[in-house]
Image (tube, rainbow, N blue to C red; front, side):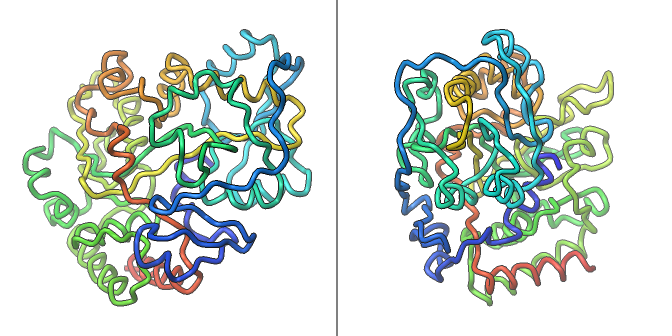
Length: 398
């Protein structure tokens, strides 16, 4: 499973968390307690997790031999890995995981024993810490930590970044063919564009129930993307039925391929996918045909890097984290993965000047302010999640 496939199912379960009703009233209005007994942070109620054990001592030499990384498929540029191997005289071995639940189960059982984990999210963190699977970080080995955008040097889910270092950030918005759709018209219509029957059969929404139902909420002027209000959820269902009847949308995660292939005119999609779209343009087609509208109200998210407590190469794992936070390395990684490193130096202007993205996609870049102001999807209680899934089943059945 690639990372974009995971994104569509990220919030399909509560991940073992028991969420209190207070969390459902607003986007992270209060923190809540998981079934592990740990408090889960939200943007407006951040948490500092309890420390389990001590970080490695300062000044230790790097281990030799092999460092094993647990990673998503195609989520680190092979050239970046090869460069790290050459720089440190080691071999990098990768194990691939396709969802957080199974990966955590294998970590707990000892089936997987990596030295570094890449790409997990805040929904997994409480389980990792409660199961005593992570070691605290020693940032004396991570000189590049200050390259992170400010909001992620002290993230709401891990105050002080005791266990985690942010890697990629992303948001969502509307990608489109600029040779088919006038950007000024799209901006003036905003989310209403997704309900425009002119795009019937040429429009797509992501195969992700939380993202697509949130689209229906945003279009109706509702910003609570974790609502448990049955009436609001029912209204979102009616709104999605209107979208379905008006446009007959494709429901998948292929917009990064289908828009550049000229098979779609418009799609609600993740920024990282749109930044990857230029690589899928047919030869000779200008990047000017690609456009993106970044809404004022949308969803933002990130993933992170962390080190297992049983890492056999913790110093190398710290060095690898530091390596990924180098701005030049981050540019190389972005050119392969598409998703945007969470570094201040990887700005829209820098991405354009480096040739990483075309000017036509400057609006698909998530800066620190955009990250901070975006809404966050949090885990829903089983009862509320069932309501959301009922909406999704009705929408996709039509």
